[in-house]
Length: 136
Image 1 (cartoon, one colour):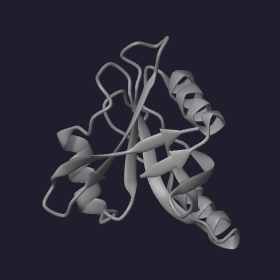
Image 2: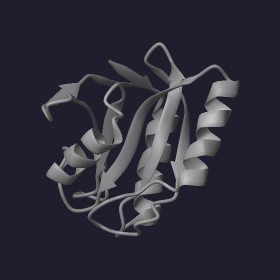
Image 3: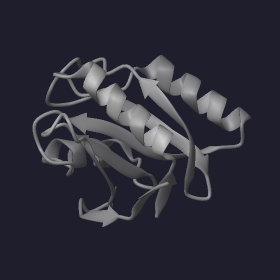
Image 4: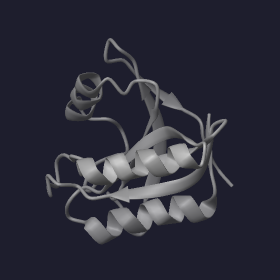
């Protein structure tokens, strides 16, 4: 289970809307499955179909979260016209990166008035499993 505040959920949705029509991306850090902070990361791909996190911003988020004794709990990104579900590109990128011990949070902008957030795990064989996402 991944837990986050309504404020952080709102920040993720706002980030997605601000970057539309391109995908947004970021990192969620915290402890014990509870998100304490959302790091907005620039999508250097500047694409509506994929994202690449800016490496310096990724490193800065890593250093900051380590200093606060937080762990990376999730990577988030938006799907601008489809449901909040990992695409084959998302699965391939997760497998290639080796980041399989984090959640993948997707925000769908298919209905821009009502962004939808969902969380998933991607296993080392590419299986996608939906996780509980508690917004409080």
